[in-house]
Length: 197
Image (cartoon, rainbow, N blue to C red):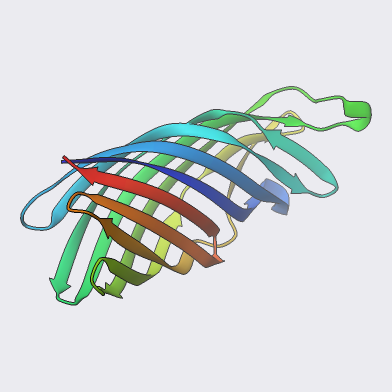
C-alpha cells in the first residue's frame, strides 16, 4: 500500500459549441492512495482541491474558483532492469465554478464548470541508481460542461494528447519523489511524493 500527495498545473485550449475557443489554466492539489501487487499491477485513487485558474479568450476572462477533483486508475509495470515500461488507464473528474471579470471590477454570475476525463498512457525509461528518468505519451478525451452567456454548452480539448518527460527519485527505502512535465499537446506539470507503508 502507498499514500502520497501531488500539486499540478495545466494549460490547454478548449473549444466549445459554435467554435468558441478559450485558454484554460488551472492548478490543483491532491491526496493519493493505492495498492501495488507483486505482479506489478497497481490501483490508485486521488481526491483533492482545484485551487483556481482562468478561462480566457475572445477578449473575455472568467476566473475559476475553488472546487473538487477526483480520479481512479490502474497501471502495470514491465521491467527488464535497468529499463522499464509502464502502461496506465484512468478516469477523472473535476467540478468548480467561474465568474466573468467585468468592467470596473464587477463580476458576472457564478456558473458551474465540470470536466470528465478518460486517459490512457505509457511511460518508458531507464533506472540509474535511485533516479529513473522517463519519456511519456498519453491520450485522453471527455466533455467539459459549462454555460456561455446563459446557454449551456459542451466543450473539449483541441489537443487530445500529451508528450513529455519526467523522473522519479527514490529517497531511502520507502519514499519516492516524482516530477512529470508534458510540453506538447495539453501542457501540464506536476510534483508529487509517495510513501510505501
